[in-house]
Length: 243
Image (cartoon, rainbow, N blue to C red; front, side, top):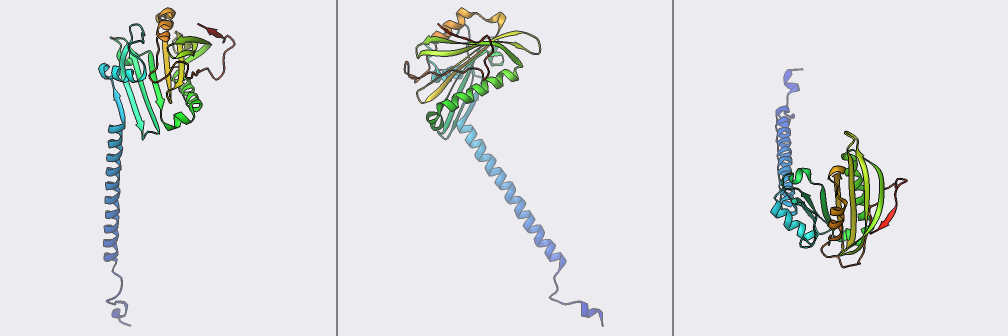
């Protein structure tokens, strides 16, 4: 048997297989890169058109005016310092504004007002209130604040009687006593929220009550509906007070 018996013109060429493998792999890689670029562009385009984050006080004041009546609301020396807006195809939308002092800006903002709206909120506002309560608890945990006592107070506002949770806690890292107030109003096919957190030394109850009594959420008719954001487990000192 000669060596020619082992060689045929129609035998597969290993070099040809490798070439086609490299071509297919290259096309696949190029397609993956193009897909990643396209998806990245679409995500960026959606983000640019549907999400806004700003630390411009002038723009933040405009967004704040979409949430509360800024002509009536008097949160002492606090002014809009930054804002966040998001619209998820009309199914869910959120606006949040941080209020801070002129020198502290958004970095040390003690007051937040916000609104959640959309089809999902309108269909199940109670679930939205639960999400807000969870978020408040998360903010307290991230700030390492241990709540020692809380009470629910009913305060007359332009939207009608609204329940607010007044809580007192302590920062775990330095022992500083902190006062927190949270509340929500369900109305205008939205859930509108207020959250305030201040060290005890900066807390002035008369000023806080004045701010709450002038809190008028946009789109909410007087007495349309109110909600509350109680702690999951109320401390023994918890109670209810009408103001």
